[in-house]
Length: 296
Image 1 (cartoon, rainbow, N blue to C red):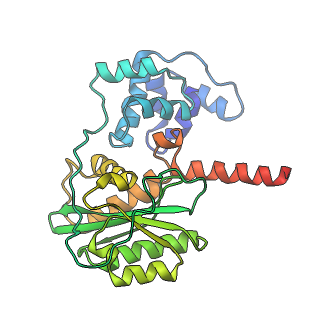
Image 2 (cartoon, rainbow, N blue to C red; image 1 turned 120 degrees about the vertical axis):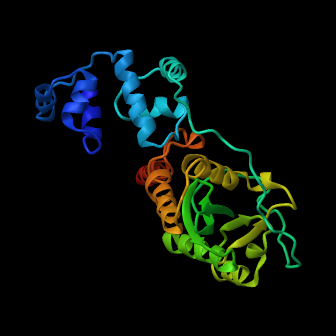
Image 3 (cartoon, one colour; image 1 turned 120 degrees about the horizontal axis):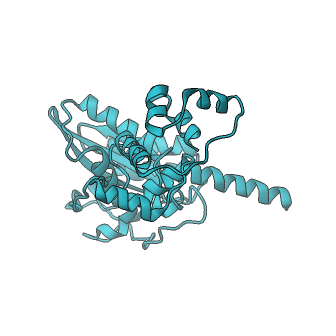
């Protein structure tokens, strides 16, 4: 298993560094790559701690012990929940501190609003049945940026997003347009958001009708009606924003792209999805559907 972990991390660390930390020989690793038998000796606490620290640094402190356990196992390293919890606790390794949710919605307008059709049903049975959306504020030394996302509740994937210096209706229409072009959902998909003026605006409502989507909005002042999207923003800010100074809007844009498209959608283990990433969960669902169709 140690050889497999070296293979995964070769793009980050040199071979001699990895072999030294894991107490294996370079010749043994090279033999394993040619078909030899991997070393199955149990890692020492020092070796396990080195791996935990490396993952913690590589993922920018995103994982607490539950996700760390599954990340280690996913990389071929045997790891028990109790052991990983102990090592992380003893050495002060923890996920980035979470901050409380702050309301940012501007619902003080006189535009028409839709009923709460979603009614907190956050578990659709298939993709492209229910999408949720929201906007958050991001500060840089050049000024504010505003991030709008569209989340597919089935696999919690960010299917569309837009980042702009102004919080006008085009930020949410652009995010929705990206999501539609990526997924091309059938008519009848439910789109849920808060009552913000951007979502109630005529351009956005026109776009929903153009795509044949059903509009649903949270009740006034009730953030729990859109809880999965609020949770996503909390995770993003905890793992990429809080405690980090971004000098430019370009730097924040790059960090947002990396988090959404590289880390979150493809890699980040989601507790709601059985600690799979959103794309892995969707791929396995599609494979299961294909196999069922072959049997039928």
